[in-house]
Image 1 (tube, rainbow, N blue to C red):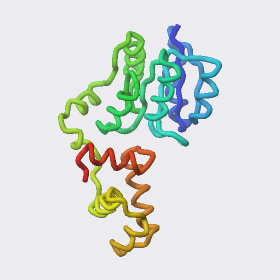
Image 2 (cartoon, rainbow, N blue to C red; image 1 turned 135 degrees about the horizontal axis):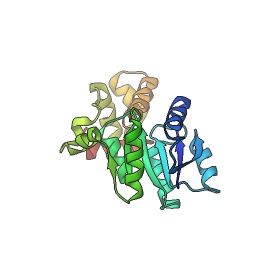
Image 3 (cartoon, one colour; image 1 turned 180 degrees about the horizontal axis):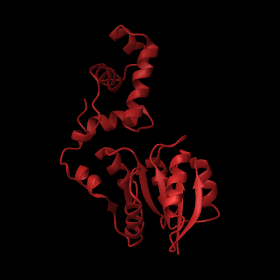
Image 4 (spheres, rainbow, N blue to C red; image 1 turned 135 degrees about the vertical axis):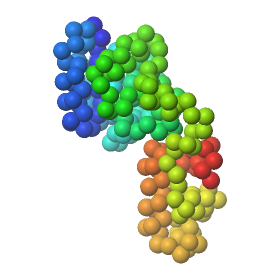
Length: 205
C-alpha cells in the first residue's frame, strides 16, 4: 500500500486531488497540509511514501522545502505540483531532490503514473514538461526582466543601497523596494544574493 500525502495552500487543489485518488485500492491517503510548518509537524510522526508538493507555499517556497525534507527524510519521494512550466523552476525542483514534476491540471492517470514511476526510483515528468526541459537555452523559458528591473538589479549587483539606487534613477525608494520584491517573486527566490547569482548564471544582466 503506497502512502500519499499532499501539501498545498489551496483547498480546491487538495479536494480535487483527494477526490481523484481516494478510491484507488493501492493508495493510502494520509492527509494534507497547507503550510510547511504543518507538514514538518506531520512528518515527525508519520512518513508518506510519496509527497505531492506545491511549489508556491506560504512561509517558504516548495523548492527550498523539497531540499530540506530530502535531507531529513531521504526515503520520501517528492513530486512537485505547480501551474508553472518554466524550465528554471522545474530544474530547480528536480535539482533539489524531487523525483517528479506535475502541472496542476494533470489528469488522474498522469498522477497515478507519476506515483508509480517515482516509487521505482525513476524521475517522472509528463510530455509537455519534458519538452520544456529539452530546450538547450534555459533563458528561453525564463520571465524577462523589464528595462527598469535590469537597471535596478545591475546597481544592486554593484553594491548600491536602495536609497543610492533611488537617487541615481530619480525614483522613490519605495519604488526600488517594489522592484526588488517583484524580481524575487518572478524567479521564486528568497533573497537578493540568490537573485544576483541567478541573474549572472542565466545571463540576465
